Amino acid sequence: MTLTVDTLTSWMNNFADKIEVNKQYLSDLDTPIGDGDHGFNMSRGMKAVREKLTTKSVDLQAGFKNIAMALISTVGGASGPLYGTAFLEMAKKSSSTDDLGELLKAALAGIQNRGGAKPGDKTMVDVWSELVPEVKAGTLSKDKIERAVESTKDMVAKKGRASYLGERSKGHVDPGSESSGYLFEALLETEGLL
Amino acid sequence: MTLTVDTLTSWMNNFADKIEVNKQYLSDLDTPIGDGDHGFNMSRGMKAVREKLTTKSVDLQAGFKNIAMALISTVGGASGPLYGTAFLEMAKKSSSTDDLGELLKAALAGIQNRGGAKPGDKTMVDVWSELVPEVKAGTLSKDKIERAVESTKDMVAKKGRASYLGERSKGHVDPGSESSGYLFEALLETEGLL
Amino acid sequence: MSLGITIVSHVPEIAEGLPKLLKQVAGDVSITTAGGTNDGDIGTSMEKIMQAFDDNEADNILAFYDLGSAKMNLEMAMEMSDKKVHLYDTALIEGAYTAASLIQAGVGLDEIEAQLKPLTIKD
Amino acid sequence: MSLGITIVSHVPEIAEGLPKLLKQVAGDVSITTAGGTNDGDIGTSMEKIMQAFDDNEADNILAFYDLGSAKMNLEMAMEMSDKKVHLYDTALIEGAYTAASLIQAGVGLDEIEAQLKPLTIKD
Ligand SMILES: Nc1ncnc2c1ncn2[C@@H]1O[C@H](COP(=O)(O)OP(=O)(O)O)[C@@H](O)[C@H]1O
Ligand SMILES: Nc1ncnc2c1ncn2[C@@H]1O[C@H](COP(=O)(O)OP(=O)(O)O)[C@@H](O)[C@H]1O
Ligand SMILES: [Mg+2]
Ligand SMILES: [Mg+2]
Ligand SMILES: [Mg+2]
Ligand SMILES: [Mg+2]
Image (cartoon, rainbow over all chains, first blue to last red; front, side, top):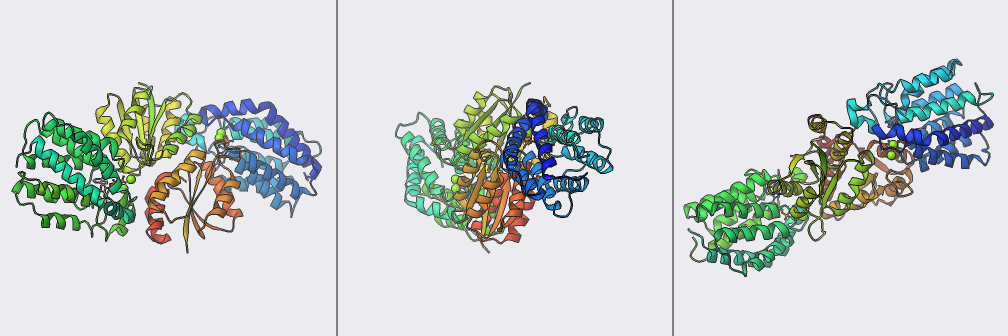
């Protein structure tokens, strides 16, 4: 449950792989209820992150900050400041703890602060708020991740571009929730982390 | 009190002269409470009108229509559709009457319809609504024209660009009211009309 | 009934740029624009607006504008055009974006108008 | 206290064009913009917003944006900047036009904010 520069790096590289493999799928999810770019945005962002991480960061805080800055300057869409803020908050928090659950809790608070979304608003907050407690409890599983992502399907969007569609946003999985699902999957798969 | 193609033409040429002489002044009036272009807009419009009127119109209706179209396509600002509508309404009305008072009454109704302004809103409607009855009563005078224009000075604008300034629009004469004042002055000066 | 959008702005660049934002979420919606005066200066032009109505592929047009004088030219163009045009006093960018999203999603005019109501800020 | 305006739009053309409308009524007001991503695509950029804050000659900036993701980048830029920035959830064009007119007329911030309130349509 403690994070190091090395486990952070392999977590991120795995996340970047998943984004790369699924970028078209993520953009397709973003098409009916958004502008169809989420996968391409995240792919651009994670390429920049991967590039940054080829140079080993001096400590966890520097690592988080590098990731945040890469995402903030390259993603372009709403997910840029949101993931960027998540990693910035983990950078801040990492000065007092390297406990993964605590770090993710700070990240979630940052995302909620930045975007103003609550659970149920059909945003990545739904996945984060569902799964951060699971990480803390040591009970995260692939199944729970899938269910958290799927739960956004029947929600009516209250934040982000999908909210312009009102009731019509129902019946589609939220793209940012799907990409956040990959982040948690990558976490689950990172050896020596959970 | 009846209008002919010839008196319409000399009325318009006189109006165009007054606009030309005062275009800088009109734009200056438009600077503190607008975008500083009213004189230039009207000058462009009245040059087009003058040009159109070099060819004698077959009848009053054609004359009014030519004037309207010239203003609509060249003025550019709010005063374009407003003066344009005034002359279009006079064109329509001229199929049933050539009485100046009746024609101007139709023009005023058109301006109010087009812009939605009421008397007191600090627009050209204030001058028109004050002076059309004077024309009908045969009591129009230079003094009354001046007073109608001046009356807009202390009003708070409710329509047009000046309305964005709220209370701060007070203390300035409305530029469209000033140009409308010139229109009525030109009328007063047109021989054989009033 | 097919729905399209016409944008009327005093500024040519805004009229050119806004469709790029809308097209991202409404690739299949016909969007036409009229920006600036006939001379390309800041202002609006009834002729350009009529052209934008004509060029629009939809038979029902939702029209959005920036400032009041654009509305006057819009209304004159509506009176002279055969197209069925619906004019909204909403925020220009936000209203047009909302309408574009909903048209693309196949939402009907009544429901679109209900969603545009809270964005009404002009008169 | 001097007041300036910063415009943040997803579309470079809108960010370029809107100041032309504002300058007509607010020739003396400092207006800076951030349009599009760092690559010039549709989107917003925190770096460009910080630059727009820096370039603004006023010490108090009134900031306006188009869509929600622009607001997030604006707020990040505000947290990282030394400038005093006031963010408004108004219609972009109409809010910025109102603010520009009032700043030019020498109206104070409180009164401007009161006039912006009815134009608030985002959250
Ligand atoms: N206010 C918000 N709060 C939380 N998440 C949000 C918010 N707005 C958008 N999102 C998330 O961002 C995702 C869209 O990201 P992306 O497509 O990259 O940005 P954009 O919508 O600007 O194109 C959404 O699926 C949603 O999960
Ligand atoms: N809604 C309206 N109803 C009546 N008159 C109006 C209206 N809006 C503007 N005006 C008139 O138009 C004048 C401004 O014309 P002009 O400067 O040419 O247009 P713009 O404001 O578009 O630059 C105002 O002084 C006012 O008399
Ligand atoms: Mg997107
Ligand atoms: Mg996007
Ligand atoms: Mg003007
Ligand atoms: Mg003008």
